[in-house]
Image (cartoon, rainbow, N blue to C red; front, side, top):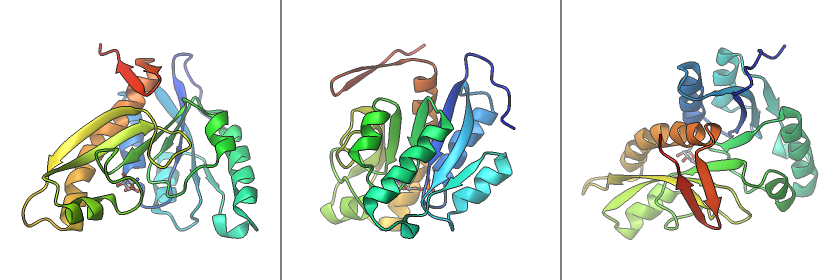
Length: 210
Ligand code: GRF
């Protein structure tokens, strides 16, 4: 049975493929009353994802749509779309969901999906963003929360946070420093969405601060 929801609370669902520390940050912010929402589901493509444990601990329903069990990407996407529709979510949060979403899903939930990426977009889109940043020799790195469009990490930017890149950093130390910022930026972006404070015009997202 789903918990009762006061009318002003948004329904938030999360897609995650792995350890789910960003998912946990969203759970914690909702439980603390910082975000006017309930988390209505975790959808994962990975039956071994630690995010599943986190969902169970928090009493959040889990839907596993295992990529490997489908004969094609199209079949997987179809099942994923159905899973997402089942959630009846106002917002879908991609928190370490490691696949590009197909156009049917992007269109169906346009303006209602956000992703966290561990780089200052548009620099270093795609996989291993922190490794790309170290390899390029940038002095400042960070994270970006953005709305999802059909491209890879290309949607309108909601929030960015910066961290320094230190001389002795490697991919792991930089990733750890960025992750601290991710855990603040993502819940904040979810909160702003749920409070109706995001106004999107083309690529630009205006935030109405309280
Ligand atoms: C994060 O760095 C996120 O930005 C990226 O994948 C990682 C997921 O970490 N998209 P976690 O599963 O939230 O701990």
